[in-house]
Length: 532
Image 1 (cartoon, one colour):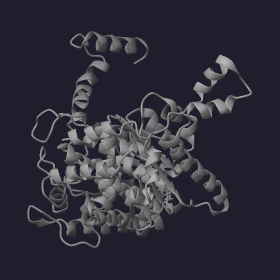
Image 2 (cartoon, helix red, strand yellow):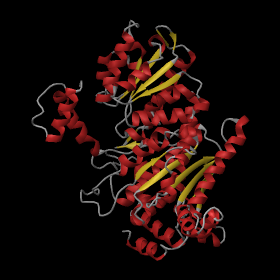
Image 3 (cartoon, one colour):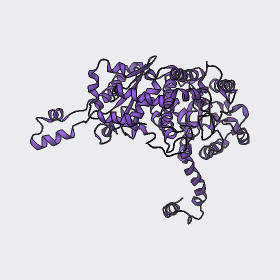
Image 4 (cartoon, helix red, strand yellow):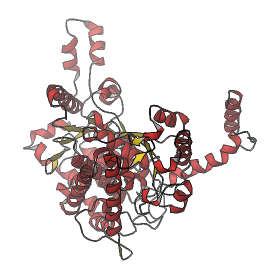
């Protein structure tokens, strides 16, 4: 599949990226726009021929057909027999969306209306705790039930005018203890996010929160809401059905922030801003459906990723938002991309003949510059970088400081591309050293350069823009998965560890460890001798 691309890549392997800018309007021809949003991939070694070969991959994979099948409710998640329809959750102005002949949109919009009614009641103080209006919301979930809303609430902090939001995901008791500390049980709302209402980490934390609240609140379940389809289990927990918001199995956890899993976000920023968030996602959906491939932002973002990972063999990519409020975006994208495309078999169950998705990691700039950028600039492995930057922040009085942030972002991508050769490095230390010492010192100051990066630029991080960004990356995952021939929408890789943890719990609690391997048994013994 990638043979032609690999031959072309070998042919241009020694070419400097910056030499491509000798052609007319390199930046304009190797970037994509969606309204006031710009995706620049000019600082990569992709040329016209490489782009053509990459776009051929889309045609070979019947990408347009698969894309339409996803939006039309076909069961693209073949291993579980499910449609993939998170896009329906943001289909505010579209027509019917059919799953097995049934239009799901009335149910989606009804649930959205119920969420808005409840969010307004909480924000206005009409829904109260035992001690009065809600001051704090604790969202208990894990995976997509935590990463999505936690990331989005932080990202949209300037729009946060509702109760304080806290997020608990880890079964480590420190997580729930830290969240409860400082909250008043009489004015706290707890949202339990678990589709099945059986997720062990989530339900363990939910029971802990309920016990904490019951110490002072007569009816603690009255201050709980559930994001779940398991009505019998939420009822047994004591949660009134009016505060239970379900979603269908065609919404995967890591794609679920657009619906009930986003309730904490809606309470934080309000229903109107939440709808703007949905409309941002819908705008990216429409662009993905209609734009020709060279002008299609999700498609080109995906093809750049395939070029770097499958063609050039760069096993990781760094997501580097120069926006501190997007601090949790890299972790969110870790799950979105690595749980989706971290597969070893094709759709037909055969071994994948090439590497699947890359390792995704990152942190906000400028913090990363004083941490891991050393490896990015001078390390032996090439790490493609994906920068995100806004033209303006929300702190108007500190605009000069934002300009410094932007200068750092653009300088880093330029430095990765240009580097610094030995002659230039010698000039940096000339007069301070001479002879062999000068040569040694100069070599330490050489930057190889020719390291690729992309930049996603936009005016400001608003609810609508955040919606566009998240949908962009969702569709990138879809495109990469279709080209690779894998199912991006199951996650069997999380099952084995969960099964073994269930089996190990009795052992950890005092049972016999002799049936376990020597390492596991030895570790259990050590931990028990030290207070477990």
